[in-house]
Length: 166
Image (cartoon, rainbow, N blue to C red; front, side):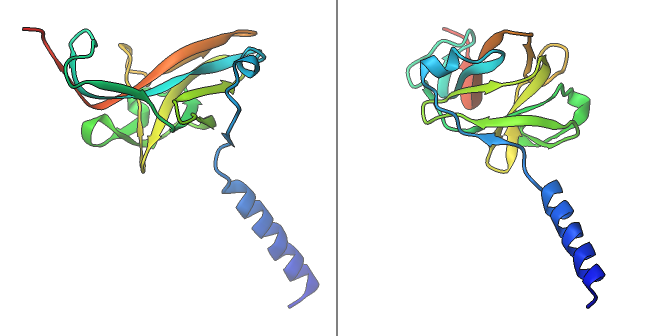
């Protein structure tokens, strides 16, 4: 093999592997003093709901809500037209670009510094994503304003049922 072939092959492999990197996965300390130092971005909690709830969202006899550790992805604003659905509202293919990601802690708490803009939030749930649509058919939109933070609670509720009170 010639030296130029080896050099070209090495450059190709470096470019190839660099392009295969997954989005940033940031594990950040959730100390309240650290969160207060975020100049702009999103902070909040990922909660899992299972069992029975009233239609207004109140816990009933066997309902449970608890924080969970999950990967939270921030995508460009994503509409229903930009994704493919599977069972129980799970999303499999997202056509917009992922901007960043963060892992929530074991209690569901997370924070992420982000540039000002409007994002859609998706939660990784095994090999699929979970998100809710708003009334304009966008997946969990969040607006990050300049020099401000946004607080949000992300609910995973595919194991919850909502019933009308008797």
